[in-house]
Length: 335
Image (tube, rainbow, N blue to C red; front, side, top):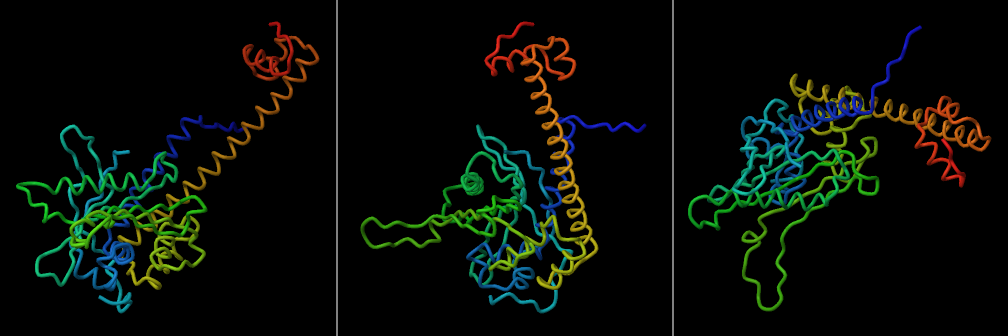
């Protein structure tokens, strides 16, 4: 007879956490490709909204990127040709620290260069994957904290505040609550004139912006292409073949061997997460059902004044648990 060995809750949690960590790393890697980052810049930043995805890819992003280890809390879209699925973007130092401040590791950071300016103008972009929809605090608040850190670390030698570059912290939430699905929210600084004529340019005060991108159902078309792209990329229900075909046909992202391999890896990890979640849910449901059955049995045996040893044998409850049950029934318990 084959015996079935069930993992403890701790073992299941460890396995699930490991899969989630691998999924998170894989997701971050996919966002470092120029073809994906360009779509995000065009759709989530004012500065790049006027340019085509292809133009951004070829003129505003450069080089290779390293994905960090997270330790802390000019026209319409142009589909002519395909976007390079090989190239990644330049990375910045993923670690930000200061005296008396906690070290923070960003998921992804890079510079994006705005063309057609007399002096080089660049944005500092931070991309974050947020798998947990209920972290226990407003996500936008954490986003502004990240922005503030990116602003403060630019201050190096001398009081050159006029040289501070604008920063973005863009948070992608693959699995938000149902009421928040398929939405993009931007938070930034605005001038509120109390009295007098405004004289400062937004470039002087609108230096940080947080964008929250809540994904939805990949099987339902949204009103924004960026949501359709990211919904497809992070979907746990679409097959790898369909996903790769959509990325290439609908969004012009060429499926290079490396990009295709990483899409496949994320699909496999996502499927494993779903299967583990279902299995864990079934086991927890069975366990809960057994507990409920034993509770009913204990109440019946207590009511019939069966010997305590017998009740413990058939229900598996300890003496203190039986005492608690008896008390809830208004009975006097005698061990």
